[in-house]
Image 1: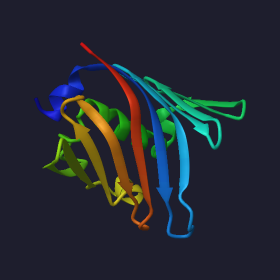
Image 2 (image 1 turned 180 degrees about the vertical axis):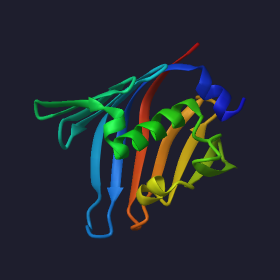
Image 3 (image 1 turned 135 degrees about the vertical axis):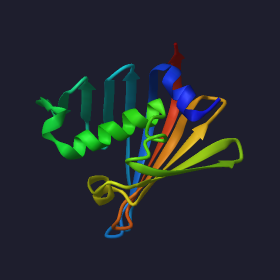
Image 4 (image 1 turned 90 degrees about the horizontal axis):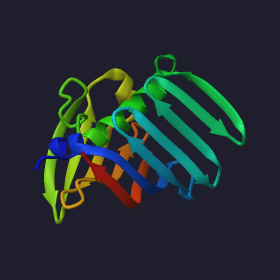
Length: 169
């Protein structure tokens, strides 16, 4: 079964994550933890629990951000960076990012028990954020277990998904 086929069958994902950011300007890595919930077709909650409490909730084109009790709501079309990140996350879950030849050059390689999908942005707005993205996909779990986001500056963000619970249609 292909990544795109598996992703299109996912109706929900609930997992914890560990995000590690390596920056050239800092010796120490920045580590955050949180939880992600996805519900098909267009709902995504991405919440950080440590070191700060911060959540991003998208349903359709509406976005709500909450940080330290402050809530901000807006439409996705009003924030290009969040729109692109949300599109990447939703596309990665559904597998559509892999097939989006207008946005990414894609290569897939088998490494042990997983497939590693490398996405190189083609569009200028995405290239400003990432030089490449690597999705680590476990066919036996039918979902991604981590993503590496390489930035043009050389900085790197790795998100590892833990305790993944999926439902398929």
